Length: 275
Image (cartoon, rainbow, N blue to C red; front, top):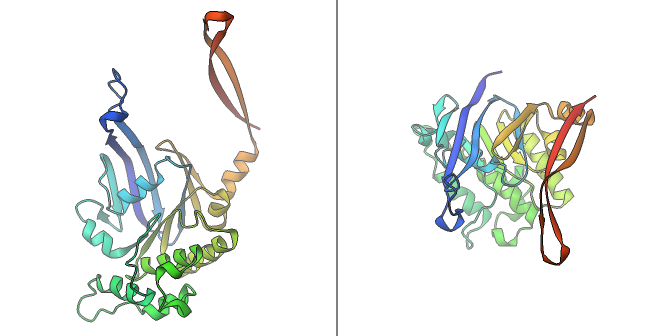
């Protein structure tokens, strides 16, 4: 398999607004959202990034997509640099953001035709067949409807169609099923698999281990800006099944207050052991 994405020692640091800083803390003026992560994605796979809110998943995706610049580190996508060659990168990828807003008076078909017109196919090039795209996401009967007329699951399927208008080589999905009911979530999963069968590499973020297990060939578990491990999802679940975690508290200090009350300062320690 060929490597289509390479991320090496990626870091992203934000300058915090003055109101969020702690007085006297020299370090608190910045926040490190991504802390030197490295990974690669192979052509044709579905690669997942699994983690809680604030883990750095969306920031990582936005840097790869060319929507944000990293503080340091190197990102190569389809042999292109994400900063110096970002225009070409954007021509060759599709992106589904966490939330999207559409022009409210245009129909689904008109919106897809507009999006398709933004991509330069050059001499002899062709634009995506929007009717075929709407049929693929099972929205053919809604082509003259507006986005406001759609259910949550239908809107997510339309957003998938929007991300495919330029026939991308890599598709990025940022939490594609958050907020959907179980049936709508399964419908999106089926579409993601069908897209992958067409030879499109997919990188997605998710909160759900079930989703990662169902869709992904490999999963990176991310928390607090770092990648903890990368592996086949079934292997990750197997490793967790053989892990025992013990947490305990140690007394770090004690303060006596008026009226006989006492405050105890405890520090939590966690130890993981494998069978």
